[in-house]
Length: 337
Image (tube, rainbow, N blue to C red; front, side, top):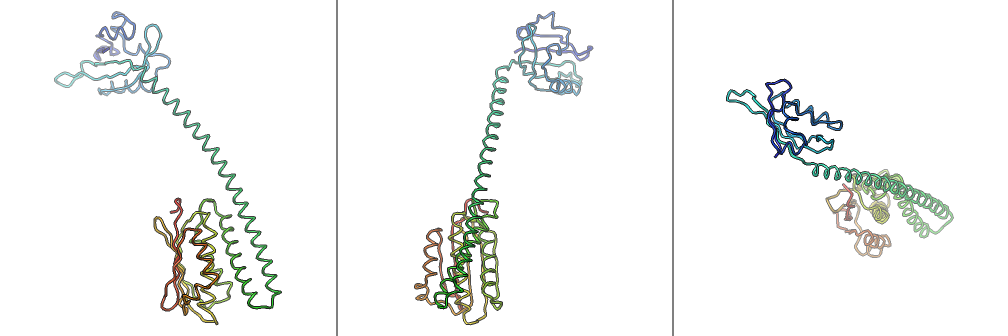
């Protein structure tokens, strides 16, 4: 291994010994080496910061281990894995510095190639990420525009249905149109929330449920129905938003119409909560309850069953003694939190 010994007791800490391997590495003869400071191997591209690190270690009497670009006698360069350490006498006084060298040009060049390739890969990743982000932004704009137009069309359909209801004298037909109108309004609210959301992939059922229950009770004109709403943010895939929104609308409107029929006052509670994989919406009233036979013949219940299947959700009814509780369980989006 190439090695030298320097004498810090002499001016400029000169080399006082070098072996043949060091002469072969640098291309200098022994006479050209002895008496010179090691800096003679430095050149224009030698890193000043690394040189300062070696100089500071010598001044502090400490060992140092660096990779330093050095120059041979013929002007060619090599990467020198330099290890330098002080040699002390029994009193602890530094008498010499011992330095070993190793040509690690291949390793350093390989590392430089790796760093260059890494930089190119990072640049390509950044470029592709920018392209994907631009594509996502464009997709978001398009989907928001679709949701906006769907919401506007649903609002127009709702207006037409309202005009039609006013011309119908048959209470039974008018009631059916009112039910259809409520469903259209619920869908419009879903698309309005999707349009306003910055994330096109998921839909907050908690926020939607809290808004919808207030709208349903408010539009009924029933100030004697007290609400207890506990809704935490609960995200689902945007593709299931319409189905779950309609299910929730059906349950809430049924509760207002049947649990509090004939002016009966009461209490309506809504709880929205979620676990790691599934979300739950629970609507409970303190009305007289809905007989199972009535549920089985209801168009609304049939609609809930079909929509639940579409959204991979389960809807269950149970007696609330008094009243009815309906629980909807559905899978959460993977991105939800």
